Image (cartoon, rainbow, N blue to C red; front, side):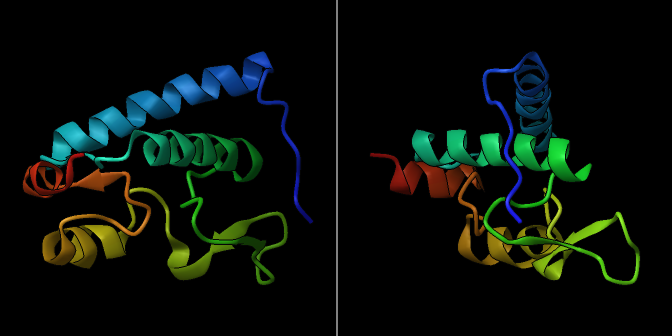
Length: 115
């Protein structure tokens, strides 16, 4: 069942700010930059903040999150994609220059695809 959050609530706004700082730190620590589409970046950050509030972790918003049947009250996503996810770190960004969600990319990818 899809859970709802009030995106105008103080709780969501506070988590959104934390998630923005988190994403900045991911870029800084890994030498990545934000993807070239600002609208995508905004949507992914909002999705990460939503998942953090609903499920306790910043699961990738591009994948469904389900309750873990072996651990009631706990959640998981496809490939357990928690940002920054293992597939992005190990495969997507090194090989393609950008992660599946398109929020993080290499500086080279950004320069080639900036509009």
